[in-house]
Length: 268
Image 1 (cartoon, helix red, strand yellow):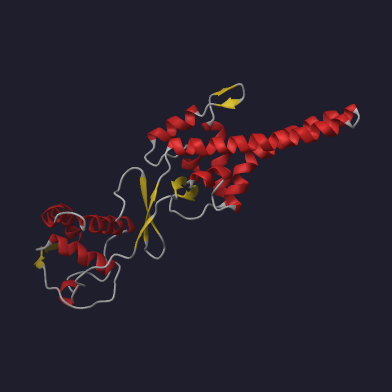
Image 2 (cartoon, helix red, strand yellow; image 1 turned 45 degrees about the vertical axis):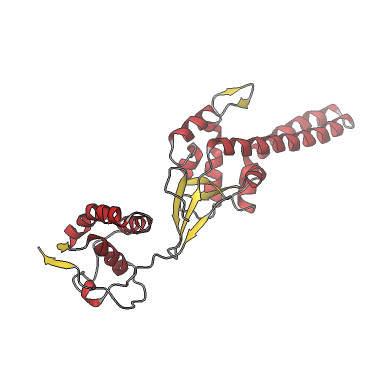
């Protein structure tokens, strides 16, 4: 069973035209993941500070001052490189995201790239505003996430990324038109359809969703959608539902079997 198209789910298409619906991670789960990473980073910084302090005791004062410089550099590297490192080497997952089954992907569902990761994490400073006692309150990030349908923070918007939940994932294969269109049904259509990628995605999404509707309701909706595309082609389909099926099959052909019949009423 496919996930209903809600604001908390993203439709993703692979180059092979296989569709995924990925649940988008909400603010609460992402905050929990961030807290895990925050604690882990704090523990790493504490271990490093202890090692530096032991070194400072056994060295002259000038080396002790240098240790403070090393600590500041380590803090900077840990703060800004922690997420980039894990997102690059662990496929978009930091330890916190692994624990909460989250993953950062691009807006098209592809694996995260180095540039994407760096960009989204550089803007983390803006999401942390305002700050109190050097601890980010994340108010800006939470407000932006709450107002976005995919719960993206500023860094995600700029980098073109999103965080998805991997606990549930449903896959649907290529859409099969049954019965396949016949030669008579395909004949009135031009060799090159005046349809863009977004048009085909809209038609496919409609056909997939309409399969779960009452037949009468599906045809009622088809009567609202089909005229938009029929007008471009100068056609008057007698069966709007079948018209959309044949239109899609023409744009993305599948092996033709048999059955079906003419459904065009003629040209304007």
